[in-house]
Length: 402
Image (cartoon, rainbow, N blue to C red; front, top):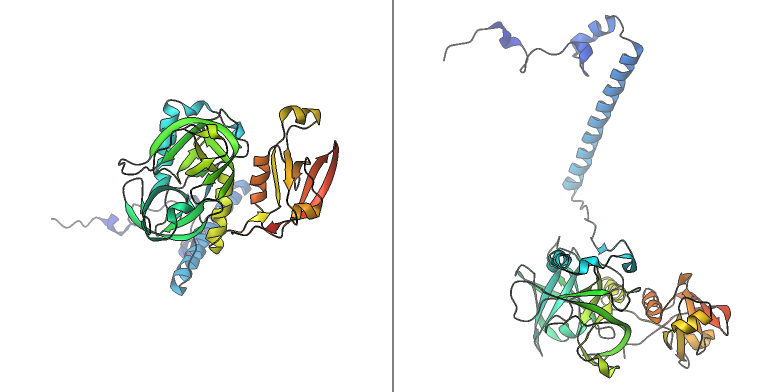
């Protein structure tokens, strides 16, 4: 190849530099020339100086951030990644139910199915059930009866991947347990609310049934009742349950019950009996607020604590509520002896209308709101008694697991 001896070899790569006044930088040899040159207009000079300052600031910031990051790595510091949980941003009552039919169900199933897993256990009695990924660092909410006295836990992801799991804790009183898998950035279900669910709303059940390949299964129905009292497989009384007519396949216990938007409103659970004999052929789900509260306790401490008032109640009837000038409430039907409710002066036929300023329109809403509190908390209740509104303060006790 012939030698190229052109004089332009001495120019900088990329061609000759722009005139000094058109650049944001100066070579030291050019400073005298620049200073001696006739001044540009005040506006042009100010613009160039401002641009120089911005660029210098950005470069300085970048260098500083680079130094901090490098210092963290060199010193062994660990920057913790925030745990991701997903919660619906709107109350369930405001969500459209149009998406619960046709293509909407397909979309919901595709979106939520990666968050539904299958749990296979061995031990005194081998079991298979489902679970819901509730945190992206590998925490799974499931039923307590599925992981009772187990020796091994295997989690099968929706794509068929098998991972070992460990039981973090279980709460037989609510039939809720937490299992942990050693995997990060897992797909997390969007959690909604069961407080304002109404009979007739669409309900979509997603579980991972026994011996069925191809990922979770999906069935569609409606919320057929709320506030149900049933007996769980472990023999525990489960209160304020959501009832649905969506068919539930065997092995889907621990799976998700969703509303028409795809937000999880409950955890499906198998039951041994129901108070209502006509409830055969239906399924039940634990309100998601209770699932979240119990799971949070288990993740934090390994067990769940239960606040106790010592009362029983029911929804205030619509006609009775209208006669009292109310839109709803939780009517007390029984107050236990030697209970916090008794000590605070609550009486049968009192109607609870608010808890700490939050409106209470049903017994389900009251139980769910109460589950967010812990033993020892001081609550303020507004109670309608003989058409007179009263304010009562009460300290929560703790319910024993026995």
